[in-house]
Length: 147
Image (cartoon, rainbow, N blue to C red; front, top):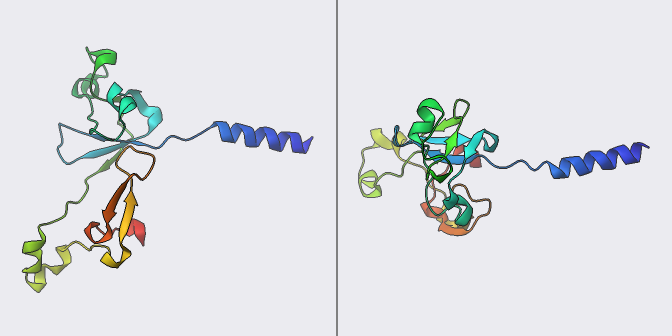
């Protein structure tokens, strides 16, 4: 009897697949990336279904403002409840020609790069489940997520 309960629990857990959050850009706040839980998304444009990761996704300004959009299912933007979305402001890589000539006092603002000796890394584009691109490690910023 306990074995049957364990098998049922394992089957139910296997059926509940947690979808990754979706990265959505905001036209109202350039530079902001919203990390939206999949269950909070009301509408995704067809472009993500036909070619995921190829074009950036934007939050629909009309839907964000009052929860409705006149374009409905034909809207090219994401309709989502973003009240609980994580707000990210990704760092950008600085011009290394200026960084190399910077004074020592400016050193803390110099981005840390991964060692080039790591070779090529497989990375996933935002909103893609699998790593499909190869990037030189020396071109990647080191973050605390890797420590």
